[in-house]
Image (cartoon, rainbow, N blue to C red; front, side, top):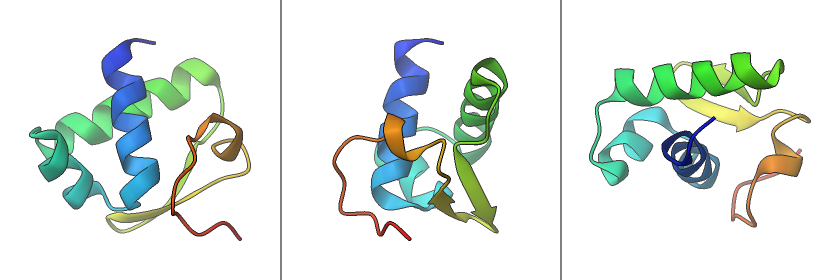
Length: 73
């Protein structure tokens, strides 16, 4: 786990959209996707439920997420 992965996680948790998060982070979408996948593997749990490029935080992701405006089921 590194600071970039945590920063990427924070932004994705805020916007809940891979393309938009990547644009706001000034990185490519595959870079973001790979970093999030690597973080999930390292933690041993899925942090996001994927629906195309949109995502929702999973119950594992919520405790890790900063206070966001993201909808919580």
